Image (cartoon, rainbow, N blue to C red; front, side, top):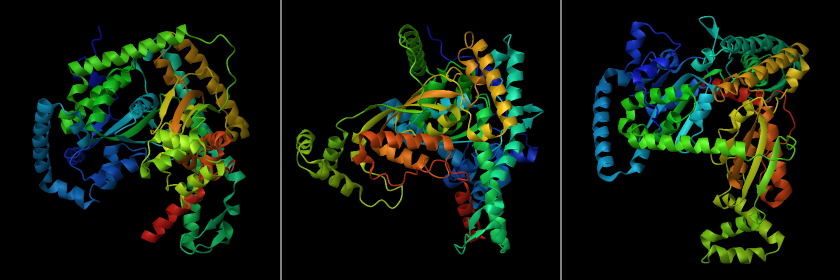
Amino acid sequence: MWQGATPDMTARLALLTPSSESFTSAEERALQPFFTNTDRSVVALRNLPEATKGALFSRYSRTAKGVRRLFLDEFLGQSSAVAAAQEGLVGEAEAALRKAEAFYARVLADYGDDSVGELGGAHIAFQDISQIAAKAIEDSRIGASYLEKSTRYVRFDDKVDGRYRYYRDRRLLASPLADDFITCMDSLFEAYALSFPLLTEYVQQQHPIADIVFENALTGQAQRFGDIDDDEFRKSAHYAYTQAVRARVCDSLRCFLPLASLTNVGVYANGRTYEYLLTKLYADPLDEVQNLAFAANHELEQIIGPYIRRANNARGLAQQEYLCERRQAQMHWAKVVQPTMPATAQCKVTLLRYDEDAVDSVVAAILFPYSEYAEADLLQTVAALPADAKERIIADYLGERSNRRHKPGRAFERADYLFELCVNIGEYRDLQRHRICSPMRQQFSTVIGYDINPDIAAVAQIKAMYEQAMERADALFRRLVTDYPAEAQYVVPMGYRVRYSLQLNLREAYHLIELRSGEQGHRDYRRTAQAMYEAIKAVHPELVRGMTFVNLTPDIAMGRLRAEMRSARKRLSQA
């Protein structure tokens, strides 16, 4: 019988990675009105204006600082709204919270209205958690928004107390392979750190700043860096170049990072979403994820307690048991039912299934809202139309799109596509953010090999370190996976591939493909988005003619440069 995640709360919290931040007594006093704790790695925000919480989480994704240190350094004393809260509004807010909790408890008791839980929300920060735990949290699609520490803008080779920042799973540390685990993880981070200056030098040599043409943020004039004589323009251009080089180096080297690498995730969600998220985390096979469920539950109880109390009560335990039984059934049948034919050759993007009558379905859906006929009648009528008439209807429906944010309407949701992607784990992390789809992935492993990106391949010393690191991780994974199938995933570097199926409608395909093919994107997911576009175009060319903001340029070496110059323009205009 499933007992649920029921160990003592104090014991569970003790297992959680403690906060790596430290504060003075004065700083702790300043933090207490706005955070539910000052010493743990999971913390909820309270008594802050919504705009402040949003800005705080936005910065949280692009800094190595914890959310509380970031608040002290950049927000406390800089915001009049925060100052107002400090001057006496905290007590009123807490009283209002208690009153709202009592009301919600009555509504729930009298009516059992789950939808009430969607009308209140909370911000919570998960700090120093593994990549696997981050993916478990971000797997919930509806009712939540996430921001995660970026591998593009933040280096991951810093140390705390002389140790690299990766999750040390207690089961692995108690295993006979504990020393091998530590050695393997340290070697991955050492290779990452050693490669950083080498690859920075290579990128600068391949794309010297003297040859780069920059656009003046104020005048629009384009000049080579060596010809710039305006001090502010020159300073902005140099900064943009430095940031673009750094982004490319970070993008290329993230493949070294193991899934044990620690990250930060900021979450905003409504109460109903948190209830189900906690239930899923409690039922996860990994101790780390279960511990995070306990910690998040503890912090959220202080903010939206009535909304999430069913996550681990009798009802929640029954749901957890169901989730575990479902997972066990899947694992059993995956072992029983196995193909007998040779494995299919790996392909980065494969269109597995699509609606053959998608064009007719889309056209009928365009007509339906302003027609008096049943959709079945419209489908029959549309099927008899000539192809050029259908194309005119689709083109008129799309209209003139001025930018990629001019999205097609819901009629485009009638066409569905199922893709199988074989991508490196770093790329999967980016694509997972798209939630208006049905995604599924296989377990993280080393069995289908790894990618070597062009930058790593171009520098012999980095390539040698990378291949050695990948082989060492593969050997350790294979030794661990039999006895520790879930925990073995921690040792897998992001350069290894994962199979990922993605079912999405045409409307979401427009959004994903145009966004991810953009010039400032990572080269890996740009290639995937371009291949998805070509696959849909091959079967339904009339449906993607309006996808005018897809960028098919193969590789844009300094893709972040223009975006960095836009940022410089904003800074200059606000100066």
